Picture 1: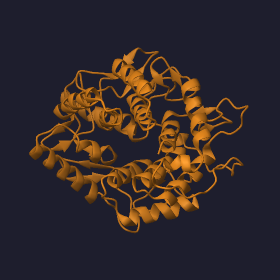
Picture 2: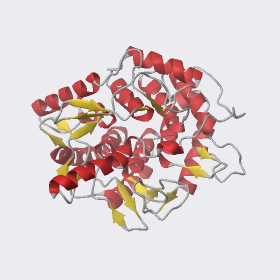
Picture 3: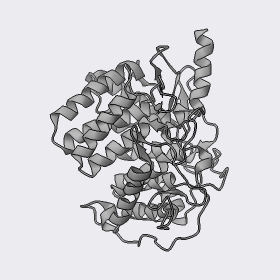
Picture 4: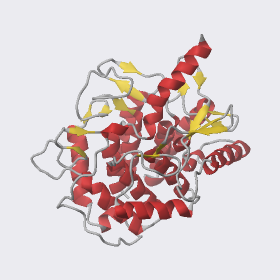
Amino acid sequence: MKKYWTGGLSAVLLLNVLMACGNAPAQTALPNPPEQQNKSQKAVPDRTSRFSDQLGLQPHREETERFIMSKMYGPYGVYTNYQDSDESDTAATGHEVLSESAGLLMRYDVLMNRKDAFQTEWERAKQVFELASGFSYRYSPKQDKKYTINAAVDDLRMIRALYDAGEKFHSAAYTELADTYGKRFSSYNIKGGKLYDFYDDIYKVTNDFVTLCYIDLTTLKRLPLPSTEKETLISNMQKIIEQGYLSDEFPFYETRYHYSTDTYHSEGINTVESLLTILSLSEAGLQKPASIAYLKQQVKAGTLYGKYDKKGKPQNQIQSTAIYAITALIGSALKDADLYGDSIQQMEKYRVTDKNSLLFGGYGDAAAIQAFSFDNLMALLAYAH
């Protein structure tokens, strides 16, 4: 029975938890919109202060933050969707909340030097998502259901936010919390020097693979592990990422790696996932020059699409806010002002500038009155760099 259940769970997780690299479903990305009048001016920021401030984006950031906190925030955190639902779908919908969103907002609060806001968000996240083994990836208020599965990428994001808070706010208490949760994470999601996507708190099982965009090398290096164990972990995970590189012609990455068969597997190449992998490598100084050159070219042209085949042929013409928000983060990590500025310019095509719209200041489809947490929070995070 357990063998059957585990296999079934893995299939479900590919539709659910693995979407934590970007929880908005692919079909929610918006098609290319017309040019908007309120486009950010192109400028070259200096490298000693926040890129977005040098581009004069503070009003845009404040409008987006105001939209999220006034229109997409409830007693349990940031809504997954602006539109409500009965919260009974396989994937998170409506006013369900995700630990992904809490972690992104915590990281934003640190970047903006808001200790009180960070503490409030952390306390809320802990209350809503904490399990014995980690953080639930999802909570449904209407179903009063805390899902018993964590997602390694989301746990690592919250642990990273705690470490960053310890440094930013000069707080040993936050650093100690990060170590505590880092130790717990390591005991459930790391086995034999390998990272696993999820752990189920009820059935006490993990999956048998790792999704490459879950491998946050920066945070893994900060986990409180014995030096030999940490070296083995980082070596293993770095090797898995680097060998998942497709080619210099299409410099993206495979989706996941299966430990039991020592093979990679991708159902097409999801752009958000590959971009998050490139971001992790960029933060660690391990980016492929071909990847960055490709991104700079495609971003400048506004031609980064949501999904490709392994040869680099677009599988759709869909674009999204999150795609360009992540390339902005890559630009920030590399201190590449051009990549950051071009990315923000493309990202802002999706910003709702009509003051009469319910979505004013946010990112979404104003006509359908649809907005999603991942797009909006990634844009907010991009603005904070």
